[in-house]
Length: 119
Image (cartoon, rainbow, N blue to C red; front, side, top):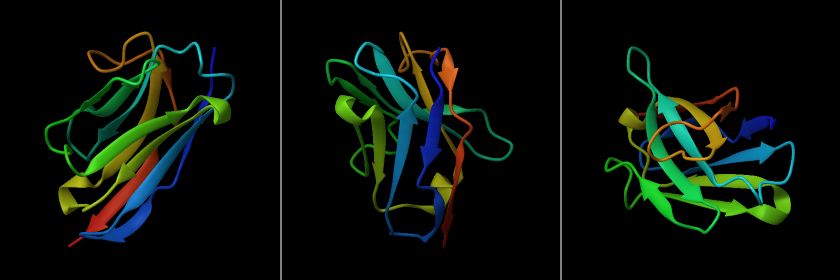
């Protein structure tokens, strides 16, 4: 079992930046994959970015070139740096962890953090 706690969400103007953090309750060294999903009102939850224990990354086409995912095993933390934010990035962002995150969600979820981008 692992608990995930997100932080860093908030309200930002279009073109701005935010950095989300996800802290795990135990070492993430042996967690194969971690990532971020998001869900906007009335829409399905979708993958934003994922990273494996080896450092391989996947991004949704809509965020490529703007978002960067990284992990710090020493701090049990995964980050999502979000730049050039757009109103369509508005959503609740969820941290996810498990065997495979990029193809389908892993077993563990955080509680979510709200990101709101104003135009």
